[in-house]
Image (tube, rainbow, N blue to C red):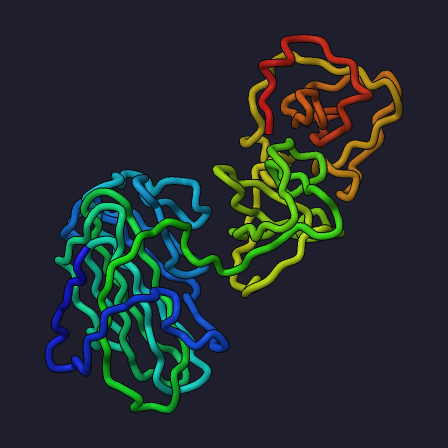
Length: 364
Protein backbone atom coordinates (compact mmCIF):
# COMPACT_ATOMS: atom_id res chain seq x y z
CA UNK A 1 0.00 0.00 0.00
CA UNK A 2 1.50 3.37 -0.98
CA UNK A 3 1.48 6.14 1.64
CA UNK A 4 -1.09 8.88 1.34
CA UNK A 5 -0.25 12.52 2.01
CA UNK A 6 -2.55 15.25 3.19
CA UNK A 7 -2.35 19.04 3.62
CA UNK A 8 -3.13 20.78 6.88
CA UNK A 9 -3.42 24.34 5.52
CA UNK A 10 -1.98 27.38 7.22
CA UNK A 11 -0.90 25.54 10.40
CA UNK A 12 1.08 22.83 8.59
CA UNK A 13 4.80 22.77 9.37
CA UNK A 14 5.82 19.47 7.83
CA UNK A 15 4.73 16.07 6.51
CA UNK A 16 6.69 12.90 7.29
CA UNK A 17 5.73 9.31 6.52
CA UNK A 18 5.39 7.20 9.65
CA UNK A 19 7.33 3.95 9.62
CA UNK A 20 6.92 3.10 13.30
CA UNK A 21 3.50 3.85 14.70
CA UNK A 22 4.49 3.45 18.35
CA UNK A 23 7.64 5.58 18.48
CA UNK A 24 6.12 9.07 18.40
CA UNK A 25 6.66 9.71 22.13
CA UNK A 26 9.96 9.38 23.90
CA UNK A 27 9.67 6.13 25.89
CA UNK A 28 10.31 7.90 29.21
CA UNK A 29 7.46 10.37 28.66
CA UNK A 30 4.00 9.75 30.07
CA UNK A 31 1.16 9.27 27.61
CA UNK A 32 -2.35 10.37 28.48
CA UNK A 33 -5.77 9.35 27.21
CA UNK A 34 -7.77 11.62 29.50
CA UNK A 35 -10.70 10.86 31.77
CA UNK A 36 -14.47 11.32 31.79
CA UNK A 37 -15.22 11.73 28.10
CA UNK A 38 -18.87 12.17 27.19
CA UNK A 39 -19.72 10.51 23.88
CA UNK A 40 -22.77 11.14 21.70
CA UNK A 41 -23.40 8.39 19.14
CA UNK A 42 -25.51 8.90 16.01
CA UNK A 43 -26.75 6.08 13.80
CA UNK A 44 -25.66 8.04 10.72
CA UNK A 45 -22.46 9.71 9.50
CA UNK A 46 -23.73 13.31 9.78
CA UNK A 47 -24.03 13.82 13.57
CA UNK A 48 -27.74 14.46 13.10
CA UNK A 49 -30.97 13.41 14.79
CA UNK A 50 -31.30 11.40 17.97
CA UNK A 51 -28.21 10.20 19.76
CA UNK A 52 -27.15 7.83 22.51
CA UNK A 53 -24.96 9.34 25.24
CA UNK A 54 -22.20 7.30 26.91
CA UNK A 55 -19.57 8.32 29.47
CA UNK A 56 -16.08 6.86 29.14
CA UNK A 57 -14.15 7.32 32.41
CA UNK A 58 -10.82 6.10 30.99
CA UNK A 59 -10.29 7.84 27.66
CA UNK A 60 -10.78 7.21 23.95
CA UNK A 61 -9.00 3.95 23.33
CA UNK A 62 -11.21 1.79 21.11
CA UNK A 63 -10.75 -1.09 18.70
CA UNK A 64 -14.28 -2.31 18.10
CA UNK A 65 -13.27 -4.40 15.09
CA UNK A 66 -16.24 -5.26 12.88
CA UNK A 67 -18.68 -4.94 15.80
CA UNK A 68 -20.91 -2.10 16.93
CA UNK A 69 -19.34 0.38 19.38
CA UNK A 70 -19.53 -0.59 23.05
CA UNK A 71 -20.03 1.26 26.29
CA UNK A 72 -17.37 1.79 28.97
CA UNK A 73 -17.39 -1.87 30.02
CA UNK A 74 -16.08 -2.81 26.53
CA UNK A 75 -18.86 -5.42 26.31
CA UNK A 76 -22.31 -3.79 26.19
CA UNK A 77 -23.18 -2.36 22.74
CA UNK A 78 -24.29 1.26 22.49
CA UNK A 79 -28.08 0.94 21.98
CA UNK A 80 -29.39 1.60 18.50
CA UNK A 81 -25.97 2.06 16.86
CA UNK A 82 -24.93 -0.26 14.05
CA UNK A 83 -21.49 -1.62 13.29
CA UNK A 84 -21.17 0.54 10.15
CA UNK A 85 -22.03 4.10 9.08
CA UNK A 86 -22.19 5.84 12.45
CA UNK A 87 -20.69 9.03 13.89
CA UNK A 88 -19.68 9.99 17.41
CA UNK A 89 -18.74 13.21 19.18
CA UNK A 90 -16.59 13.01 22.33
CA UNK A 91 -16.21 16.01 24.68
CA UNK A 92 -14.15 16.52 27.84
CA UNK A 93 -12.28 19.09 29.86
CA UNK A 94 -8.82 17.80 30.76
CA UNK A 95 -6.89 19.28 33.67
CA UNK A 96 -3.30 19.90 32.55
CA UNK A 97 -0.85 20.43 35.40
CA UNK A 98 2.13 21.53 33.29
CA UNK A 99 1.70 24.23 30.66
CA UNK A 100 3.59 23.67 27.43
CA UNK A 101 3.55 21.98 24.05
CA UNK A 102 2.00 18.52 23.85
CA UNK A 103 2.16 16.04 21.00
CA UNK A 104 -1.08 14.30 20.12
CA UNK A 105 -1.41 10.93 18.40
CA UNK A 106 -4.66 9.91 16.72
CA UNK A 107 -5.14 6.44 15.22
CA UNK A 108 -8.41 6.09 13.36
CA UNK A 109 -10.29 4.08 10.75
CA UNK A 110 -12.05 6.65 8.52
CA UNK A 111 -12.86 10.25 9.51
CA UNK A 112 -11.75 12.35 12.48
CA UNK A 113 -11.67 15.99 13.59
CA UNK A 114 -9.91 17.26 16.72
CA UNK A 115 -10.65 20.60 18.36
CA UNK A 116 -8.71 21.84 21.42
CA UNK A 117 -9.65 25.07 23.18
CA UNK A 118 -11.78 26.07 20.17
CA UNK A 119 -8.91 25.58 17.67
CA UNK A 120 -9.26 22.86 15.01
CA UNK A 121 -5.90 21.08 14.81
CA UNK A 122 -6.92 18.12 12.69
CA UNK A 123 -9.78 17.93 10.19
CA UNK A 124 -10.00 14.71 8.19
CA UNK A 125 -13.69 14.10 8.86
CA UNK A 126 -14.39 12.95 5.28
CA UNK A 127 -11.35 10.66 4.98
CA UNK A 128 -11.74 6.98 4.10
CA UNK A 129 -9.29 4.26 5.04
CA UNK A 130 -8.87 0.80 3.45
CA UNK A 131 -10.41 -2.19 5.20
CA UNK A 132 -8.48 -3.74 8.10
CA UNK A 133 -6.21 -0.70 8.38
CA UNK A 134 -6.05 2.57 10.27
CA UNK A 135 -4.37 5.91 9.60
CA UNK A 136 -2.24 7.65 12.22
CA UNK A 137 -1.98 11.43 12.61
CA UNK A 138 0.22 13.43 15.00
CA UNK A 139 0.17 17.13 15.78
CA UNK A 140 1.54 19.52 18.38
CA UNK A 141 -0.64 21.89 20.41
CA UNK A 142 0.11 24.35 23.20
CA UNK A 143 -1.96 23.84 26.34
CA UNK A 144 -2.17 25.89 29.52
CA UNK A 145 -2.22 24.77 33.13
CA UNK A 146 -5.81 24.11 34.15
CA UNK A 147 -8.87 22.96 32.24
CA UNK A 148 -8.37 22.46 28.49
CA UNK A 149 -11.52 21.78 26.46
CA UNK A 150 -11.20 18.93 23.95
CA UNK A 151 -13.53 17.56 21.29
CA UNK A 152 -12.92 14.52 19.09
CA UNK A 153 -15.41 13.86 16.29
CA UNK A 154 -15.37 10.48 14.58
CA UNK A 155 -17.05 9.10 11.46
CA UNK A 156 -16.96 5.37 10.78
CA UNK A 157 -18.04 3.98 7.44
CA UNK A 158 -17.53 0.21 7.04
CA UNK A 159 -15.25 -2.63 8.14
CA UNK A 160 -13.12 -2.34 11.29
CA UNK A 161 -13.74 0.55 13.70
CA UNK A 162 -10.67 2.04 15.42
CA UNK A 163 -10.25 5.27 17.42
CA UNK A 164 -7.31 5.93 19.73
CA UNK A 165 -6.49 9.40 21.09
CA UNK A 166 -3.56 10.22 23.39
CA UNK A 167 -0.99 12.90 24.11
CA UNK A 168 2.35 13.49 25.84
CA UNK A 169 4.43 16.47 26.98
CA UNK A 170 7.03 17.73 24.49
CA UNK A 171 8.49 20.90 25.98
CA UNK A 172 8.01 24.59 26.63
CA UNK A 173 5.26 26.44 24.75
CA UNK A 174 5.98 27.22 21.13
CA UNK A 175 7.85 24.03 20.17
CA UNK A 176 5.64 23.82 17.10
CA UNK A 177 2.18 24.94 16.10
CA UNK A 178 1.25 21.72 14.37
CA UNK A 179 2.76 18.74 12.59
CA UNK A 180 0.62 16.30 10.66
CA UNK A 181 2.10 12.86 10.06
CA UNK A 182 -0.07 10.45 8.06
CA UNK A 183 0.67 6.79 7.51
CA UNK A 184 -1.18 3.51 7.35
CA UNK A 185 -0.93 0.52 9.65
CA UNK A 186 -2.76 -2.65 10.59
CA UNK A 187 -4.71 -2.82 13.88
CA UNK A 188 -3.61 -6.35 14.69
CA UNK A 189 -4.03 -5.90 18.44
CA UNK A 190 -6.40 -4.26 20.88
CA UNK A 191 -5.90 -0.58 21.80
CA UNK A 192 -3.06 0.37 24.10
CA UNK A 193 -4.32 -0.51 27.61
CA UNK A 194 -4.29 1.96 30.47
CA UNK A 195 -3.07 -0.75 32.86
CA UNK A 196 -2.04 -4.37 32.55
CA UNK A 197 -1.42 -7.18 35.01
CA UNK A 198 0.39 -10.47 35.17
CA UNK A 199 0.07 -13.58 37.30
CA UNK A 200 2.77 -13.99 39.97
CA UNK A 201 3.72 -16.67 42.53
CA UNK A 202 1.21 -19.26 41.25
CA UNK A 203 1.13 -21.31 38.04
CA UNK A 204 -2.44 -20.32 37.25
CA UNK A 205 -5.02 -17.84 38.53
CA UNK A 206 -8.76 -18.47 38.30
CA UNK A 207 -10.76 -16.04 36.17
CA UNK A 208 -14.32 -15.67 37.46
CA UNK A 209 -17.62 -14.03 36.52
CA UNK A 210 -17.39 -11.61 39.43
CA UNK A 211 -14.94 -10.21 41.97
CA UNK A 212 -15.52 -12.96 44.55
CA UNK A 213 -13.91 -16.30 45.33
CA UNK A 214 -17.27 -18.03 44.90
CA UNK A 215 -18.18 -16.51 41.53
CA UNK A 216 -18.44 -18.93 38.61
CA UNK A 217 -15.18 -20.17 37.11
CA UNK A 218 -14.44 -19.10 33.50
CA UNK A 219 -10.83 -19.96 32.70
CA UNK A 220 -7.26 -19.69 34.02
CA UNK A 221 -4.82 -16.80 33.60
CA UNK A 222 -1.21 -17.91 33.26
CA UNK A 223 2.14 -16.29 34.11
CA UNK A 224 4.29 -14.72 31.37
CA UNK A 225 1.27 -12.95 29.88
CA UNK A 226 0.21 -9.32 30.20
CA UNK A 227 -3.57 -8.96 30.53
CA UNK A 228 -5.39 -5.70 29.88
CA UNK A 229 -7.27 -4.43 32.96
CA UNK A 230 -10.63 -2.85 32.14
CA UNK A 231 -12.16 -2.43 35.62
CA UNK A 232 -11.50 -2.90 39.32
CA UNK A 233 -13.58 -3.74 42.38
CA UNK A 234 -12.80 -3.61 46.11
CA UNK A 235 -16.00 -5.08 47.57
CA UNK A 236 -14.56 -8.41 48.75
CA UNK A 237 -12.43 -6.47 51.20
CA UNK A 238 -9.15 -8.32 51.66
CA UNK A 239 -7.74 -7.97 48.12
CA UNK A 240 -8.75 -5.88 45.11
CA UNK A 241 -10.13 -7.67 42.08
CA UNK A 242 -9.40 -6.78 38.46
CA UNK A 243 -11.55 -7.34 35.40
CA UNK A 244 -9.27 -8.47 32.57
CA UNK A 245 -9.42 -9.38 28.91
CA UNK A 246 -8.19 -12.93 28.32
CA UNK A 247 -8.41 -14.45 24.86
CA UNK A 248 -12.05 -13.98 23.80
CA UNK A 249 -13.34 -13.72 27.38
CA UNK A 250 -13.61 -11.09 30.08
CA UNK A 251 -13.55 -11.99 33.76
CA UNK A 252 -12.28 -11.13 37.23
CA UNK A 253 -9.04 -12.16 38.97
CA UNK A 254 -7.98 -11.67 42.57
CA UNK A 255 -5.25 -9.12 43.20
CA UNK A 256 -3.58 -11.49 45.66
CA UNK A 257 -1.51 -13.11 42.92
CA UNK A 258 -1.77 -10.41 40.26
CA UNK A 259 0.90 -7.76 39.72
CA UNK A 260 -0.34 -4.51 38.18
CA UNK A 261 1.54 -2.01 36.03
CA UNK A 262 0.43 1.18 34.30
CA UNK A 263 -2.04 3.84 35.36
CA UNK A 264 -4.32 1.72 37.53
CA UNK A 265 -5.85 4.89 39.03
CA UNK A 266 -7.44 5.64 35.65
CA UNK A 267 -9.14 2.22 35.50
CA UNK A 268 -12.81 2.61 36.50
CA UNK A 269 -14.35 0.97 39.55
CA UNK A 270 -17.17 -1.31 38.42
CA UNK A 271 -19.97 -2.99 40.34
CA UNK A 272 -21.42 -6.29 39.14
CA UNK A 273 -24.64 -8.26 39.29
CA UNK A 274 -23.50 -9.68 42.64
CA UNK A 275 -23.79 -6.26 44.28
CA UNK A 276 -27.31 -5.86 42.88
CA UNK A 277 -28.57 -9.14 44.39
CA UNK A 278 -29.61 -8.28 47.93
CA UNK A 279 -32.66 -7.72 50.11
CA UNK A 280 -32.67 -3.98 49.36
CA UNK A 281 -32.98 -4.58 45.60
CA UNK A 282 -35.68 -7.23 45.38
CA UNK A 283 -36.47 -6.05 41.86
CA UNK A 284 -33.15 -7.56 40.73
CA UNK A 285 -33.89 -10.97 42.25
CA UNK A 286 -34.97 -13.56 39.65
CA UNK A 287 -38.42 -15.19 39.84
CA UNK A 288 -39.04 -18.02 42.28
CA UNK A 289 -38.67 -21.45 40.65
CA UNK A 290 -39.73 -23.70 43.57
CA UNK A 291 -36.22 -25.06 44.01
CA UNK A 292 -35.73 -25.78 47.70
CA UNK A 293 -32.58 -26.56 49.64
CA UNK A 294 -32.02 -28.26 52.99
CA UNK A 295 -28.81 -27.44 54.88
CA UNK A 296 -26.65 -30.37 56.03
CA UNK A 297 -24.69 -28.27 58.50
CA UNK A 298 -24.89 -24.94 60.26
CA UNK A 299 -24.45 -22.56 57.33
CA UNK A 300 -23.15 -19.00 57.18
CA UNK A 301 -25.26 -16.79 54.92
CA UNK A 302 -23.13 -13.99 53.45
CA UNK A 303 -23.83 -10.89 51.37
CA UNK A 304 -21.67 -12.18 48.49
CA UNK A 305 -20.38 -15.63 47.40
CA UNK A 306 -17.18 -15.45 49.43
CA UNK A 307 -16.11 -16.19 52.99
CA UNK A 308 -14.36 -12.81 52.97
CA UNK A 309 -17.65 -10.90 52.85
CA UNK A 310 -20.08 -9.83 55.57
CA UNK A 311 -21.99 -12.48 57.52
CA UNK A 312 -25.77 -11.93 57.49
CA UNK A 313 -26.92 -14.78 59.73
CA UNK A 314 -26.43 -18.47 60.51
CA UNK A 315 -28.84 -21.06 59.10
CA UNK A 316 -29.31 -24.06 61.43
CA UNK A 317 -28.76 -27.67 60.39
CA UNK A 318 -31.85 -28.79 58.49
CA UNK A 319 -32.89 -25.25 57.58
CA UNK A 320 -35.12 -24.84 54.52
CA UNK A 321 -34.04 -22.25 51.93
CA UNK A 322 -35.54 -21.07 48.67
CA UNK A 323 -32.92 -21.06 45.89
CA UNK A 324 -32.88 -18.13 43.45
CA UNK A 325 -29.42 -18.28 41.88
CA UNK A 326 -26.12 -20.14 41.85
CA UNK A 327 -22.51 -20.09 40.76
CA UNK A 328 -20.73 -23.09 39.28
CA UNK A 329 -17.23 -24.51 39.24
CA UNK A 330 -16.15 -27.76 37.62
CA UNK A 331 -19.75 -28.30 36.40
CA UNK A 332 -20.90 -28.40 40.04
CA UNK A 333 -22.90 -25.89 42.05
CA UNK A 334 -20.45 -23.72 43.97
CA UNK A 335 -22.47 -21.12 45.89
CA UNK A 336 -26.24 -20.64 46.14
CA UNK A 337 -28.18 -17.40 46.32
CA UNK A 338 -31.04 -18.16 48.72
CA UNK A 339 -33.81 -16.75 50.83
CA UNK A 340 -34.12 -17.69 54.49
CA UNK A 341 -36.46 -15.97 56.98
CA UNK A 342 -36.98 -13.01 54.60
CA UNK A 343 -33.23 -12.53 54.22
CA UNK A 344 -31.38 -12.96 50.92
CA UNK A 345 -27.76 -14.07 50.76
CA UNK A 346 -25.20 -16.63 49.61
CA UNK A 347 -24.36 -20.04 51.13
CA UNK A 348 -21.82 -22.70 50.18
CA UNK A 349 -23.49 -25.24 47.89
CA UNK A 350 -21.75 -28.57 48.79
CA UNK A 351 -23.52 -28.68 52.16
CA UNK A 352 -27.03 -28.17 50.78
CA UNK A 353 -29.41 -30.83 49.46
CA UNK A 354 -31.56 -29.57 46.60
CA UNK A 355 -35.05 -30.48 45.35
CA UNK A 356 -36.64 -29.21 42.16
CA UNK A 357 -35.47 -28.36 38.65
CA UNK A 358 -32.03 -27.12 39.65
CA UNK A 359 -30.88 -26.65 36.05
CA UNK A 360 -33.46 -23.88 35.66
CA UNK A 361 -31.84 -21.78 38.42
CA UNK A 362 -29.89 -18.84 36.92
CA UNK A 363 -26.09 -19.05 36.95
CA UNK A 364 -24.05 -15.98 37.86
